[in-house]
Length: 257
Image 1 (cartoon, one colour):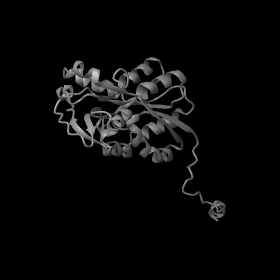
Image 2 (cartoon, helix red, strand yellow):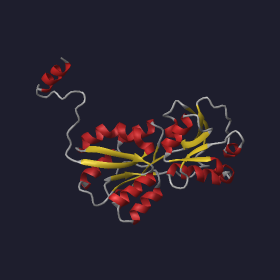
Image 3 (cartoon, helix red, strand yellow):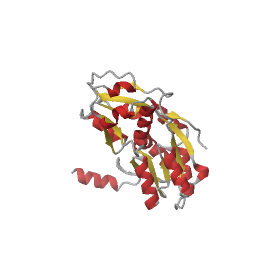
Image 4 (cartoon, helix red, strand yellow):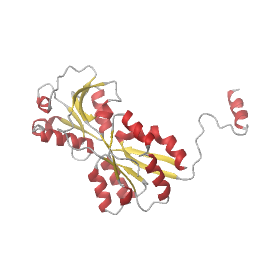
């Protein structure tokens, strides 16, 4: 009976059903840092409506996304968590330079499982005996891990903790490792920690003590719909986007072009 009812309703002009997807004139591929997942998924419906496209997201570690862009060239927009990776694509002639904006910033936090009794007041405390395993996004390549390493190096503690580091493929994997209880502590973005009830923040790294964290956004060259990509880029920097970023804990750096 349910199947018959659904069939009859589908025959009614104008009835689309709850699962229907809006038709779009083009498909725009957005390659974005894993830490932007919730923000961009929240903005997708309004950006699709305003630009007349269907957005397809590829979330992951920014370094992996940059390699994919270099290898396949299928991305229309790149929203990186690191300026140097955008620089690399720029030097390869893959970035529409006039479109590049440094849109957001973030903060680092030290986290532990929700029931952690650790007391972490500074980077030096991570070198204590209580921290046997420290979860980071890969500090050799992934932006969140590189930022964490830069903070520890500036504090003079990297040498004391590097053998305890358990590298993860991206910042969300580093968060998940702490959530599981397998790690004593981890260093992630404040925006990621705020999404989880399975961790608690042990230390907020002061902005002045950490490295500058910057998320650049740019349109990529040699793609079939540059004007529609421009509309999406504008939407991702507009008033609704800025409000969404702030609500999730990001710091907005630039206005829409």
